[in-house]
Length: 183
Image (cartoon, rainbow, N blue to C red; front, side, top):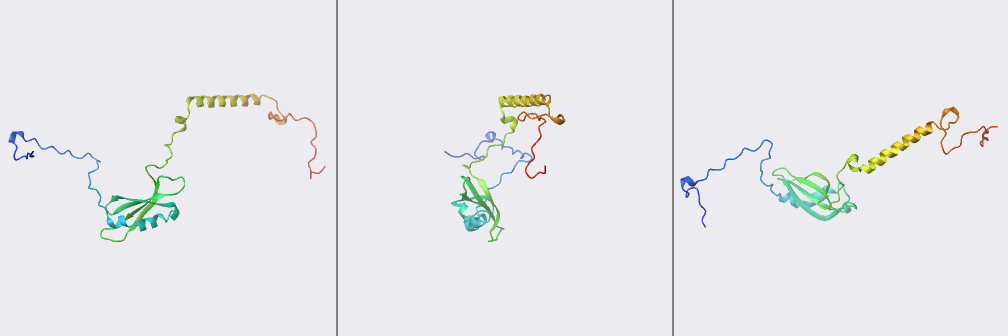
C-alpha cells in the first residue's frame, strides 16, 4: 500500500489544511521532554550527603531512584526507614549550571510515595457529626441549663450562695481549731 501525497491527488480531492487554533490564554504550551543529565544522575553520593544533613544515615534506606525534572535538574529519591513512614522517600534535588561540572544540592526533604500512609482529608465538625449526635448534644445542653436554673432557686447557705448538693447546709456548730492555730 502506498501513501498518497498531496501532489499525487487530484486537485478537487485535496482536503483543506486544518487551521491551527490559537492557544487559549493561559494554556501551557507543549514543551520538549527534559534531557537527562548524566553527571547529575550519577552523583548519588552528593544526593545522599544532602539528605544526611536532615536525617541520620540509618534512616536512609538502600532503595534509590532518580527522576528528571528539567534540563540540569534531577531529584534523587531514597527509601525512608523511619518507623511509621513506610512508603515515604527522602529526596535531594540536584542541579548544575550550563557547562559546569559543579553539582549543587538545591533542596532536601521527605515526600510520600504511592503506597504511603497519609492522613485523611480534614472534614469540618459539622459535616462529621450525625443528626443523632447533634440531637443528643442539644438535649444534654438543655438538661444542664435546667439543672442550673433548678439549683439557683434551691437551698442557700450563708451569704445567699447556693450550697452544693454533695455538702450539707452549714449549722451553727463551732469549727475545731486546726493544728498550729492559736486558741
